Amino acid sequence: MIQLDLNSEEHEILVSILEVCLSDLRMEIADTDSMDYRDVLKERKGVLIKTLTALGYSPQASKA
Image (cartoon, rainbow, N blue to C red; front, side, top):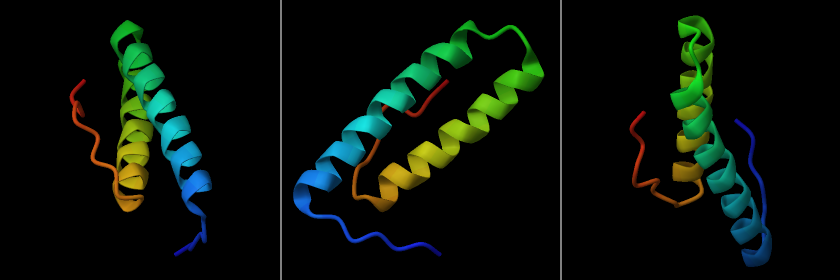
């Protein structure tokens, strides 16, 4: 397990970046025709959600 020591500004920036990545990933999943690639993207989405949750953020729309 990796542990990060972040100050509040670093925490906010990291959460913000991950939120943007998650949003972009959701759009990419919706626009992807390849089922194999879609599965890879959904796995990445799960990792992003898990990371955001570990940072104390609860992604609301984790569908797609």
